[in-house]
Amino acid sequence: MTPGLRPLIAGNWKMNTLVGEAVDLARAVAAGAAGSKAELLVCPPFLYVAGLAGLLKESGVAVGAQDCHAKAKGAHTGDVAAAMLKDVGASYVILGHSERRADHGETDAQVKAKAEAAMAAGLTPIVCVGETLAEREAGEAEAVVARQLTGSLPEGFVNAGGVVAYEPVWAIGTGKVPTEADIAALHAAMRAQVGAKTRLLYGGSMKPSNAAAILALPNVDGGLIGGAALVAADFLAIAAAAG
Ligand code: PEP
Image (cartoon, rainbow, N blue to C red; front, side, top):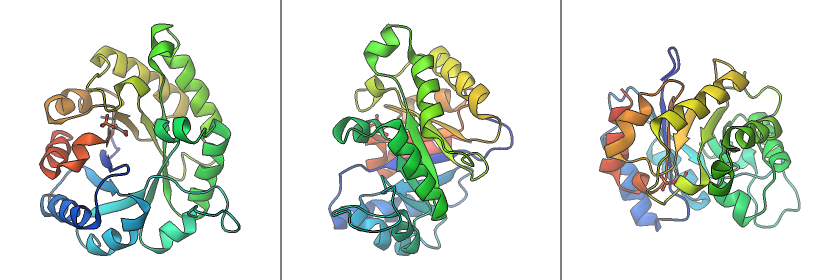
């Protein structure tokens, strides 16, 4: 944790849940959210952002999206603009997740443009970075993340309250987690690059059994949670481990 920064526990639901499941999951998270020292955020599929933002309005649980387009509006079939998300009650947007970088070929420059659009619309961007297994084994993890940060974070990101999520690609959904020393070293390097005001989340197979140890590391200011965010009790247990 970093003194002065409120921890953020963010759930990335990815392409999961039918609407009834999404409502049940959101209600269960809200039921356990009272008194949380951490800020709680759920990021459902686009379709449910508006409904869940209404449902969670008084709950203290924020709602975010998993992507937005870099343009404010126009001829971009199938895409969603940041202002639309803001308009229906979202406050955050995850950008540059490794699955989007892999599935959609998103580059650092595109992530940066999306972050600019998010900030212009009044959304807080959560920009994801992280190395592949080959890059870690080659000793390049810190250099890769530094390059991604340089390429993906727009001017004004820090002052806009932008959040960074370090998610080693090889740890996402695999049950594998870097050593605590490796997470601490990577987060210290990110801290040196982005300064004291930016919340730095860890993501990658975080679960109730490892959350307390990871969240206690210096410069880890919360978590971006995938699989465990689909089980309200697990997500809330991780939030409780944040303080
Ligand atoms: C993620 O994809 O953002 C993530 C952290 O997934 P998981 O927790 O399932 O590894």
